[in-house]
Length: 421
Image (cartoon, rainbow, N blue to C red; front, side):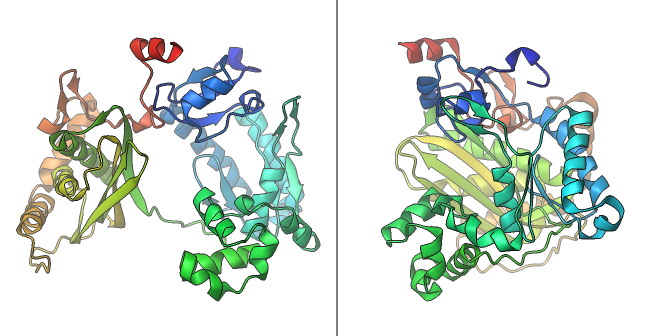
């Protein structure tokens, strides 16, 4: 709406408008009609037939995000990003210069509005849990009748925390998603208060110790996590929803190799290497499985990541068509770390041994080749050079669609006509 003012006041949905599209976000006008994030595009169209669908523009979001975080850092160096548009700020050290936390919040809102022409909502509390809850309470509220303005800034004092927790639904508690909430409800836990009163040992067998302890502490308002300005990237990955389900294993291998190459380029761009490659698969019945392989050396080579990703395809069970495929790299380390050439493998499977050996060769011996390919793409564009896995009937497919179509394939004319019928 900032870039296209004609969209203001209309029910606008960002996401894929195809049969397998998903709502990434939407305006409050769309929320009045019951549309929300993660809803299927088909359901969103049913609830809001006059909605305007627009596709994501990740490069534009990154541009605005960079400027947004510059404003945050001007208020305090202790900024912990939660994404492109959200962060925790510890303003303890800024109060002597900039005033109370509430004064800092209102000043920050004014700067964001003046310099970015965007609004933001801020929650203030003594820990992350209540600050997050307060930020939600600061947002506008969409009712069937109208969109009610939000408070903009909400402060939760320590003496008010018990009352805030008492009003929370289970799913409003940080870390409780639909699946966890359903599991807790099956155990007879229907509120945050009931969760807070529960002996953590009774939950360990159902949720695992780490999750059980974390959720019971949050339900009691306990959250001692500091704001960490040096939060490190834990994984880099890419996944795609296919317009037509893929059934052929050879086709899955081709996609896995292509995505693996794209993820490797993302690793190099972040100056990172990975030791673990994970393949994620979502089937037509919406069940999900993942397979991982770990090497004892860091990799960022296209072919090395692609080979390991494709190696994992045969391990995926056959459950019919695959609607989504993803490749992610984790166990990250600094990109300048050395590659140890002598190694032993405990995995007896010869195929994995061969892939590990090839990956080590690629990573250790082809540094100059990777640098040359990256430079060619930097100078002449991503389609200047490609591997065989990046070739398609329509040309070179190098850059992952994630950048613009992260929430499902676009709607073509035939699909549009079919959906309307």
